[in-house]
Image (cartoon, rainbow, N blue to C red; front, side):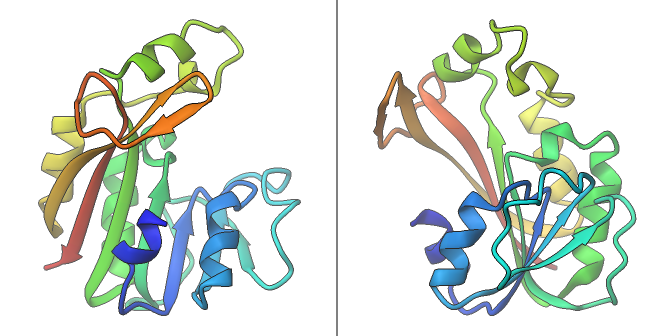
Length: 176
């Protein structure tokens, strides 16, 4: 699992916009202590009992400074109204040299373009499509590396780093 490797050396992980915690369930199975943050109580109804959940906003997290080894945004940052505050808050709650993994939907991918056509698609509700701007804001708090990842065509999932094909743009960072 990509995210397990990216979080190597971390124990306490904050998942911002965790929703039903599909990815987070896998992290729990790998021994991570995961706290899920989401604005919607309904979204976290299916979260495992072994995962701590908090109802709240990404822009104003109610956690102590330096509470986590890592923070993840799995296809959530682009839906947060004030993404700048969310990025700053993640930096605040991370310990020094803490890791952040931000998985963004890639608006240039065929997968994204196809899925935004449907009016009921959650992808059509995306607020921020400018990946370069998101990266620029991330660089204010973190040293970052980026990559395009994961091609999806129909039910087929395959490796891809081609921006026209990869469904995700991932920003990995270390708190500066």
